[in-house]
Length: 127
Image (spheres, rainbow, N blue to C red):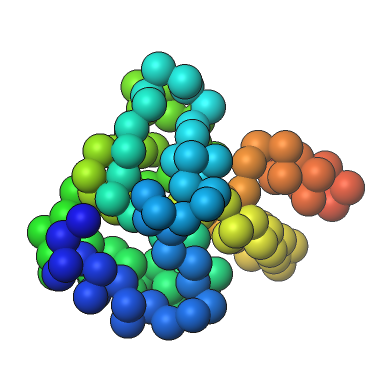
């Protein structure tokens, strides 16, 4: 992995897990729904907040690393992973907020369709 990318990722702090090939769970976290997309990213970042996402994107840009964003890891052509770059795994960002007054729904990047259905159907909304 690029030392520059690793140095940039260190700015994320301890709240945001950074998983590299030497991590015991690396193979579990690098897997995506489409088994054909068997890629080996240099690092996988699991942000816990929007601020973490911003810092991770900045780290990838500053180090000129390839960046793949994974919401649920369901991209059929495998766009939610990459080789030798940074995977931004949004699976922890699943919050869903419904504003009935403005008739809007704010959905975290890691929320799946089932999460959205469970939140909206009881509210009389259809997502």
